[in-house]
Image (cartoon, rainbow, N blue to C red; front, side, top):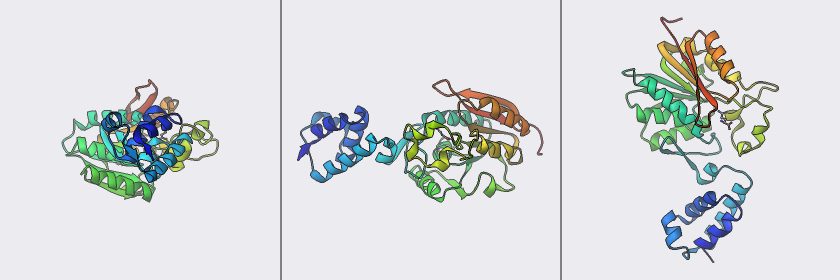
Length: 279
Ligand code: GLN
């Protein structure tokens, strides 16, 4: 039988040091302090085998979030399975922009299109409890994960299955947020950085030879019909998409187009609002 300290040492020869530590703590059910203070604590054979299997999966590129079954987003922990995209730090920018806009409305009505694990819908409901939030996804399996996350955080969110505005006929919102699939189908990035383990449906529209903007076209195209006067659409996109998305927003009848950079300086979120009366 090995010790947790030896298991950590062996694991970090195969994978990133922090990932190794988190996997040992996860499998052994111990804290970081335990690992440092009691490295000779034994790791039962069954746990050693489980750790070996997880280290092997991490070494083959599987995202740590899938191995641990959770990921942090905007200060909260969310359940994550291979049915949903791993939440990205750049999506936290969408939360900040959304919160700035929600401050100006009393009881805002909010839609999150393509909610995935539900991080946007649940975070916004937690931080703006007076909002009514509806979250849409095409994938029933993703909606199961999102519902679980809503209940973990005691957030009342209405979840509906369907394609973008499909289940929202006749509804209008003060704010629509979306982090749709935007990686072009031919982008080699899809084969790297753990992306082969994530649901294709969440990453790319799959249009052969496409530019990754198919979902943005659908979301922006329907916005004027689903925003209340003064309402905002905020959409995440690829770093090379900002100009094209602002043009889609303009053609979609929205005003005040803007783009914001993420923490790494890439143009990541664009948005615009519906001015005046209903179309
Ligand atoms: N930002 C992600 C990536 O490039 C893609 C997320 C998305 O398609 N919505 O890895």
